[in-house]
Amino acid sequence: MKNMRKHHKVIITLAACAVIAVGVAGTYSILTDATGTVVNTFTGEEINTHIYEPDFDGQTVNGNVVDKHVRVVNDGPDDAFIRVRVTVSPEENAKLVDINETDWFKVGEWYYYRYVTRNVKKNDGETDIDQSSTKFLFTGVELTKGDDVDVTVYQEAVGTGKYTVNDNKKEDGTPGIPESDIISAFSKVTTE
Image (tube, rainbow, N blue to C red; front, side):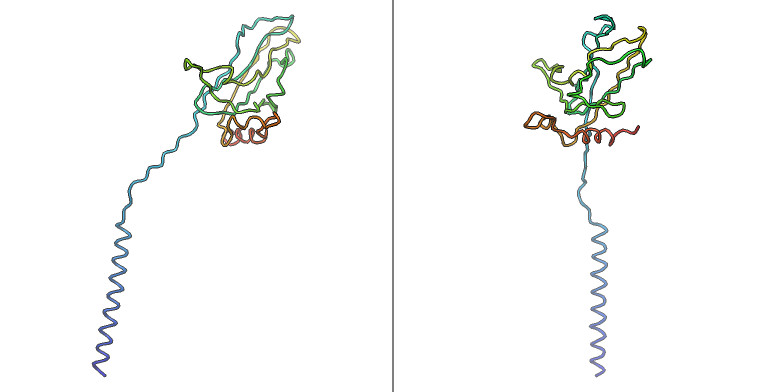
């Protein structure tokens, strides 16, 4: 019986040593295990736009209207949504003429372009202004009182997220991108 107890103690001791050895080996392997280096490269959208006013010379024509055809050109590599803010100072001295409410919609002080803009290159590699820009926001400024007026045009552009130029129009020809999604794209990157 004594021999059996001794034999039992040896087996229990060996089992305990085995458990400890497995635990130490497992811990060592976890602590020394190495994987290859993983590099995650993220590239943001590159948006480049500018205001385009062809033939603007600041001269009045048609009596008291100054020709001012305002467009925004996307000359960057990525698609963009565009919005414009126009201020007239002093406000009571002038008003915008022929505001394009078909291609633009106004929320607060901002005019938002309804469509995705994309830089389209001509055969010579230059940006095709007609295909890479918005439609005119307005075509002139009417002087209503006096002739000393400052008109400031400021534009912002953001990436389009999931939208592309293919989303611009529905099959029935109406705008395909919800206005709320265009506004939301700006609110994600700007704070006012």
